[in-house]
Length: 386
Image (tube, rainbow, N blue to C red):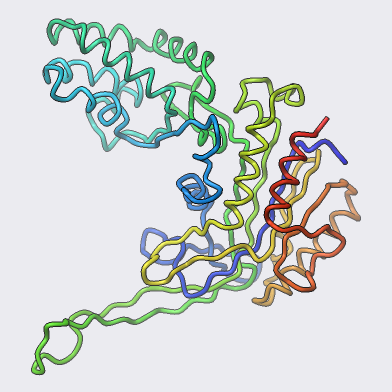
């Protein structure tokens, strides 16, 4: 078996009469591909649902996981608000702008709308809250509080202090940052490379959509009140979606342990193995649903193909450049043919496992597993790599 530097997860999910991911006009997101327009689910939408999931495979349940929060209001909500009512409001007002500028940049000090929502981990927020509290409770007046806050948040000094703090703790940016990365324009040292790469999911076939007309009737209307009290329409779509996720295992281990990615085989890989297994479970079972009350957009993967290998990953999306028939069988057949073509041309030798609901899967010559077995195989693949 090759060294499992990369895990590739290919999946097929079926959704009916739903509106999973909307654009700015309220319509389903779309993607022109090949000779047809497809319905699309953005990678950002997928990642958010996995990140916020509180179900069986929630990342938050993993021992040692630190939470992360994305917001424009980190300073106000996590640093200032805990002190409201116990510290003079004038002192809080004097301190807050310096911390806002340090976290969000000078333009974000006063104007919330100009701030970029940033992702900070619990260790970072705890440290900043401690420093905010220290300055607020030790200051005797707003003037001295402002001076102390500005001293602490001076550009280079603040960045060096934050770097030292991050180097001294585990998962300073939280588990979310360790998985999906982050960019902090005000502090490049805080940037984290993403080891989990997520493609936009799209239908294997041409889009299937209709405009759903609906009416609302007043329950208290009398016999003289005829007709509907409100009419409207919304778009609904159906489709079989191809999803693709890559996990860069050395970078994941590095982000979780602090060990250089080049030395990942010598690091403790227990958390990386558990995180990856849980992510497999989430990809299979967590639906990126909107309009829950009116469409119940819940579904599990009909097919999952997981590959472990040491070569640069390659998507199988090209299998659907020519739209497939809207059936699982045709989609699996096309995946098999594309996989076979890659194997014959490049001979990369990935180790593979297949989960499929089909009695006779179109993807051939791959060991079939259940989801628990697939998750355990992924754990073992990472833990036993040598």
